[in-house]
Length: 220
View 1 (spheres, rainbow, N blue to C red):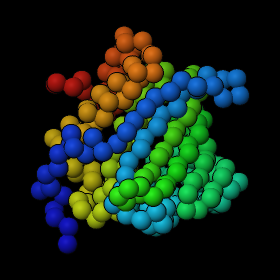
View 2 (view 1 turned 120 degrees about the horizontal axis):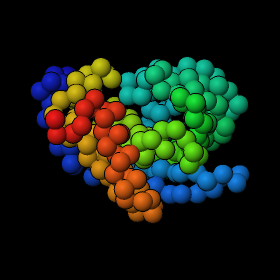
View 3 (view 1 turned 135 degrees about the vertical axis):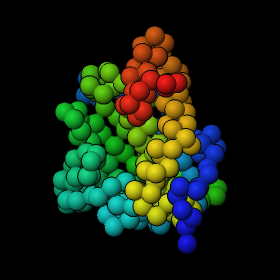
View 4 (view 1 turned 180 degrees about the vertical axis):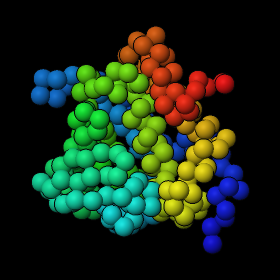
């Protein structure tokens, strides 16, 4: 039996340190794009991790309810997140899809492969530089959301902390969860700076991003 999520104490810094993050400025069909990459290793087999991210029954435990035709060419919907088209799928290795959210269209590629210990997941989310969320909130708007999702996936495959998305929400709204969100935003800001984005622009957008997740400036 899992412990009561309200009593779970986790180290946000250690959890953040398990993910490798990059931001790249690229080009797709003549349009300047931004590609954010996350890489994390999970304590399970390649086939189990593939099943955890492609099975609607299992993804409901860490990502949200997924509906639609989950075959190449089919349309999908993730409750509270995005809709799009499945473009390619090669189990148990990789899939790609469009990611349509709040008027912006992006592309997501997910790959899973055996690692020295466990299985590595590499997630790449690319979108136009003119995207509304990127322009206003920077890398954290997409990156923090994916950090939280991958933390939920880690819990799901390891079976350690929470039993549902609702239970995870209790932790996210507490002090450790808040520290995780702040730390995630800081790491994505650092990745933006490494990509050559202007510091003043990065800092202004990071502050607006913090407002999304906290509803108030950090420090209040």
